[in-house]
Length: 359
Ligand code: FEO
Image (cartoon, rainbow, N blue to C red; front, top):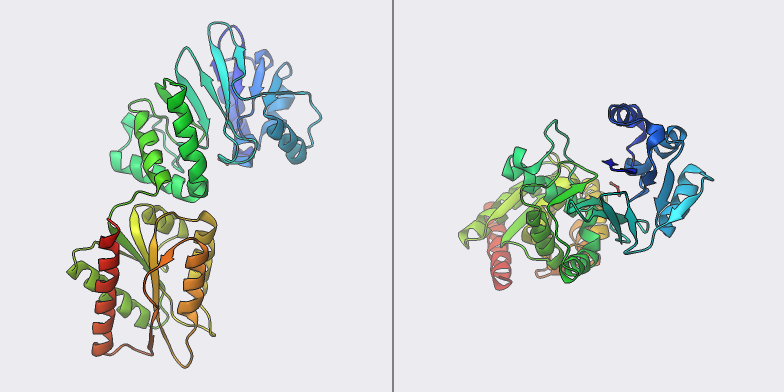
């Protein structure tokens, strides 16, 4: 909320938290004194309590993009008059001026950011956010690794697909020379110590730059695919390539995507179950395909009993997700023998060499 001669509230909150929002607002101003309710983004984590707030912000003019206006009506059935904001429009609150920057598809068609010219604060909506909740509020209060990992997790799972738009946005911000002292996203902590840091991270992530690591993600039924995964990792380490092993029994899809962001390659291990992938891998790869990670190489491996099929099915999904397949699948029958584990080691070595060629 910006309290000036005019008062503007930017976005609301998820509906279960409407009372917290209202209480916070009431601690500062009478809700009836708020002049503008600015909707940067309509997704329910941002506008879920829009109808509740509207009921108490009796004198507020709602402002949104044209797309935001349509989405507000479709989501909330609101018939209230909505002022349409165009890219670059300005609004004076008295001592401060707001500039609206349309950022369609970051994250929905409606999305925009609001920039406070005099304070050099950008209310960035989803961009530069994190799925992180704490009583701490600012980047300089948070452990640097948590800062990075939270931002990476968010980027990989929410914005990766829109990387070309992120690159364009950053170029545009640089082109117009937008000075930024504070980035205040709608999620997680606020960047006040070094607001350029997440911008440089976004720039790298959007370009597809990554370290030379390889992510080995797998699931296993009776342990054979796990044995293969470990032997493959050992082969990669022999070639000097760092491998990160992730078993889907112990982790979530979102962490896989977060870690993949900084890897050049992905190896997917899946047992064959009923002529197809293990369901956990099917889910992961469907998710990955939607996010379309850039500049990754990949391959698949796994054990089967009487008929394979999982590896080629997994490979197909990787390809559809934009991953370049650099080795044919490695499928082994039943439990791998020590000779077969040597083959896994060799498979890891070969994949490591392909990875090193990319650096
Ligand atoms: Fe696109 Fe935070 O929602």
